[in-house]
Structures are given as C-alpha cells and as structure tokens.
Image 1 (cartoon, rainbow, N blue to C red):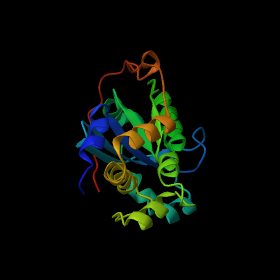
Image 2 (cartoon, rainbow, N blue to C red):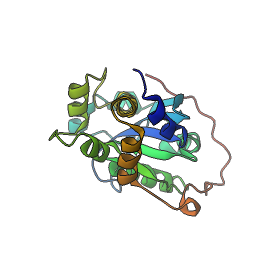
Image 3 (cartoon, rainbow, N blue to C red):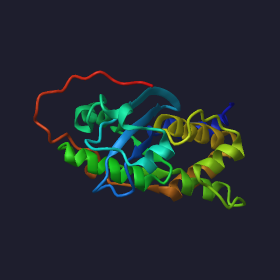
Length: 217
C-alpha cells in the first residue's frame, strides 16, 4: 500500500506502539490478560513484533473461549504477566499507545503492570475515534466494520496480534487517503496526551530479571 509521502512525515515525528489484548472479561480489576499482541512503529516503519499467550492464573470463562478461541490449554504453559512485563514495557517507551477502544487495552495494561510493580502511563490514540473523525459518513467503526470496509486481511479475528495488525494497516491507509494536515489534525483531536514527566517511569520491581522464552503462535 503506497503512502502519501508528505503525510508520512507526520509518522516520522512520533513512535507508535500498536497493541491489542485479549482478556478473561471486561473489568480490569477482576479480570486478567490472556494474550497480548504488539507492533512497534518507529519513523513510519514496523521495527518490532511481539505476541504471547499469558497465563491468567485461573480458568478462562467458556464464553471468552467461544469468542477468542483461546482455551486453558493455550495458556497453561504460558508466562504470567509479571514474567514478560519488562520486555513489554520497553516496547512502549517514548511512544504513543495505539489501540481500538484504547481505554480498554490501556486500563488492562496499567492494571497488569501495577500488579507486577511497574508504573505505566503514556499518551493513547484510539483508532475508533480516529476513524469517526476521518470517515464520518460511516455509522460503524468497530474493528469488524473496518476490516470489511477496507478489505483488511485478518486471519484470526479476536486474537491479539492479528487485531493489532489491522490497526497498522489502518494507520497506513489514512496516510494514503488524506493529506498531511488532515491526518495531523485528526490525530491531535483524538490523542489523549500525557505530560512527558508523567509518562513511562522506571519499573518499581527490584527483583532479578526473569528469563523466559517468548511464545509465538
């Protein structure tokens, strides 16, 4: 997909970390992450991918397995969140968190990091809101609607990495469809900013570094 070259310059000014999490339910305080997918974008280029199942420490509800296809068998040998927290944390440094319904993913990540002894605060960009600003003629802006509307490829819907990849395709699309001023204004209208001094802080966990094997599927 070709970029609008001038508009791409905006992406060169910021780092973006696109993320999607699958969870055991909708409440970040009482539920846990069971899968995380991350794409790190620097200077308009995809520089790092990350995906892993996460062991929630309890059985996955049947209705969640029905939606995601993730079962207890998938996560029983997966790392707990605190075992991958340091590596995931580093992917968000000096970046804007990008997610669909970003507050959902952001709240879960903040809560999981807090349990692991890490502070996690950074700017967020919601692609639902961004889609509404740039494509106001459409009524639906959920991820399935975007996939169908723009013919994005998504091999496994409701899986963290596959859903996150759709958002990368969406960011590339808007830099093709719109001029740089429109893209910049739309992002500035939708981004939730955080003062630099309040952004990602050093982890509070003083335990020795945990070595683990990343799990890719």
